[in-house]
Length: 372
Image (cartoon, rainbow, N blue to C red; front, side, top):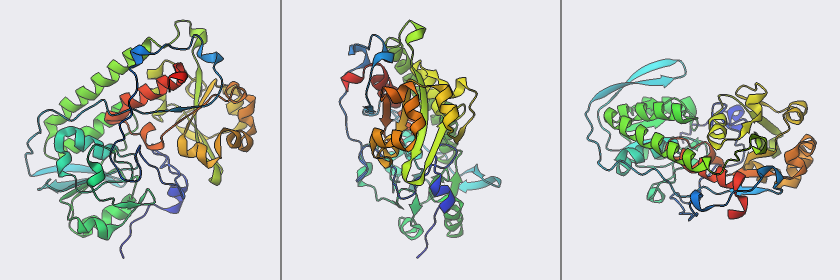
């Protein structure tokens, strides 16, 4: 049986954003992981919430809840102009790929972002399979083509007879790309999407590969407007007194593997924290990208809030286990007040059309946690 996998080294360090996130023995999943599709979570509008008088006084953990998608597909389905030749961004350099048929599309990534983009371009009916984190409405009816969150059964994919495949190499890796190309399937490697800017670029690359390049402009504008609108809603929750604005750190955790990373500038988390009006302590400290946490660095940063992914928190058996595994957390303000916020793994880094929803979820958890 043909089977394409990421390397065990990558699987042990799988950072959905640039590092290839450590998912050893742990499947990253969306809101309805077992079957795809979107669980509709009804949340009161941000405008109706009463924010904490002082977010720094709040104590206890909170789970951020991501609501239903706020970005919907383009109203008019774009018409493809084919054939097209586009550049696949392989690790060894750009490779020209000709696409003559987009009737059967597979778009796979660790966060479900690529499939989400295809869906929001209005072409969801052309998708023939899904990864573990694809959650747009109706995706539950698509066959799952991955196992364990990041392994791909090549034979199963070929059995779906895809006319074109899009991947960012976060699942399957280059081995999967080579197997598919050797079987005659056009594969386009899209650059990893970690923030609004890179998501807009990924949207353009996907649209070009689907023969609907002009549609990317419309969708990118729609997403940008949704993010701006959400930031405007969040602004009313942010304390006017800057001394009351929380200091926040994102800690990537895989307790079983003993992996603890702090994310800083350029990681994608930094743009989310900026939208939330909080102080990004990692960026303040000059922390670049994703690097192993040190006790000294975390204590010096002294965050009021530590943001983690839900499965990471589960891997340490909750807040008590996290503090026991990393005693330096207990020396921070966040640790003393147990102010740990967890959020769905795949949603945090979904980017593209899900960014405004993640901003919304984190804003509630930070500024109005009792509303959840």
